[in-house]
Length: 113
Image (cartoon, rainbow, N blue to C red; front, side, top):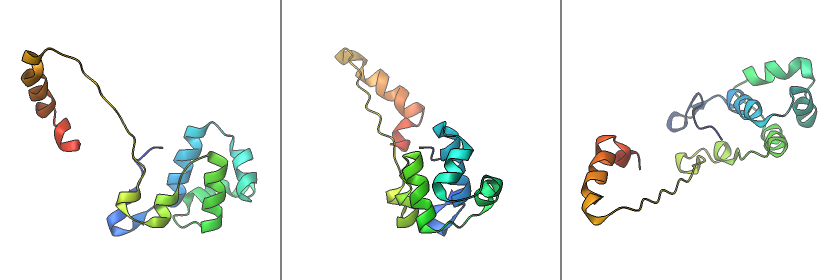
């Protein structure tokens, strides 16, 4: 899932067509197969991607076909946006702890977490 799409969830301004198109591009599924799965003629698929507003049923079909969770769009809450978990385990000697933590703070990783 790629969170870098054209939307602002707080202002309810996001482009569902672009979000779905990004998911399709990352999936490796052909446009032909995808268009058939969501009930759209291949010739009209680009028009669908240009549409910011999709029906719930079409969005559910797209999610099923792409094995992609679009439920955060329907919930329309920032807290429901998909998140990626990264677990980082660092083993170091006790005297290196402050040096490592200061590097994390300098790179602003701490604020992002």
